[in-house]
Image 1: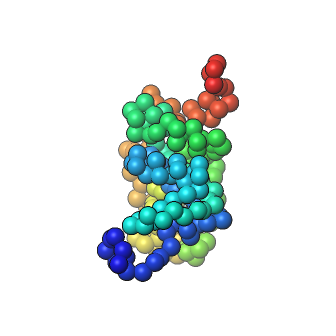
Image 2: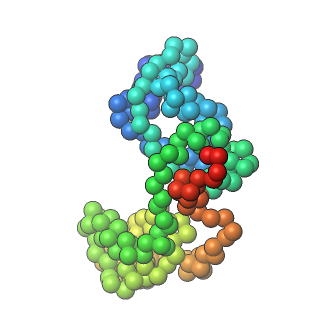
Length: 193
């Protein structure tokens, strides 16, 4: 019997299942320090322990981490371990917010709707491109899904889009996009780094 509810058989965890492949870990910004410590050990040694097991296991996994959190703030506040940060931020891919890539919206929407066998009017596409998308792609996907469910199924019109137009005027705050800061730091290291 295992150390947690329903642990009556030996199942594969995410490390074991990803052995020899890539493991995508989203929302790094909410990872507790204890998880960061464990991930750092796996990154550096490839060794991990299963829950409730004292035996060490080896894994060969490539990690991809994603976050929309302000990494520099997390480092300052101590909610992100600096040794973990320096271990994982060697190849940063900056993904600008959707509001900076309005030209991509049409293709994303049409791709999603093709799977649903639903069409969308040109006016609705234009409305989607005008909106600032503070929730980025997730908000876009949810809006399209909602329009498919609540609208006229064969053709989405502008009135089927329940977009909060008040949220479209997102103000840029003092905090720079964390990925921009990281990319700049890598491209222009300070003296002594």
